[in-house]
Image (cartoon, rainbow, N blue to C red; front, top):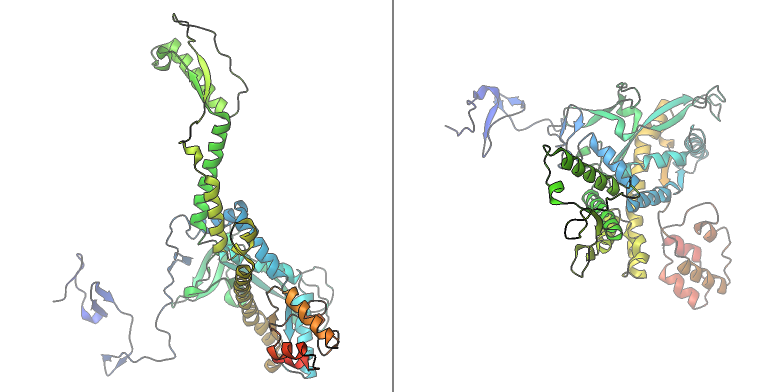
Length: 492
């Protein structure tokens, strides 16, 4: 007989239970059968497993640090971190400003006039015809960096020219369907997600923060959900601030301790000297106890800056000592706690927080270490990470906004354009300046349309290509030969 754990009776085999090693009896999901016997062979078109995301009643409980970062508290904690921590706030602002100015281009499906016409239509719908500028929409989407996810609701409109409201007005009058807006649905207002049997989320329920009313469910087909990562297909992604949470909490406690320590070093700790009969007075000793209570209130009010001065009685005992006195005790000597360099510890925490956000390269000038080559390497890694974020942005927009709109308008799928983002990289002006100088010395016109060097440098339309001039191009220019540099760079 199989071992049972706990006081649970063994269920009959007909109910689909099986003994698992180290676990006991566990119920199995219904299996397909063949000739009345269970079969492990199942339909390959049917999904059997689950993502493994911990969720209950539409709320995600995959965070192990409970209750500090549970389903309801996490958005407010992340908001506090963004608003109160200088390194975090500056880093997220920098990334948001950097990525929101990355150029977005709509490329036609092919070189035919019909494909170019559809690309122009999409450019107008995307960049010119929504009620909010596209840059603001990108900035709203990038709130996923702090919260881990950014849900946005898609609203459509008929492009029928100017209307009474901005949401229904259009700059175009072709009768097609376009976007009215993509509007953020604040992370802290989410009430629950709707999941299917396999753990895939299918909708989003929001609670109005003003009225407290639960709003109608927004289905997946009407949403854009931008996420930093999609582990377990969690709709909440993973905040960039999650790794910095413990550091932030530790640093906040240290800053409070530092402020208290500095205040006490500057002002000292107030001490009110009292006679023993007053200090030890009990409530039965009405007179002395009242004096003790008054002294206690004076100390508290002085520490809270509610008193600018204290009236003290000029009374002496039989030995000529003051019966009451008010002094300050300051930390002195070389072995006191105030000598701990908390500032150095906080600087170390600042660096670690910046590392978690991949923005530690911006602290190179504020620390003693670091060099240009290290900064260049960190910048390249940072640019690659930010480029991946923009990749996920364009993929989400293409799949859940552009393609459905294309189908609604019954456009030819073969003519659907592609949305691409520009490069998230620093232009090395020293390298390109030297290269252009060699080109000019070789008698090559760098402003020629075929070369498009100025466009790559951001002085015209287009983006800087992710290329480095070929070794052959450099060698040929150094030797003074006339070469087809345009072909050489394009081949790179």
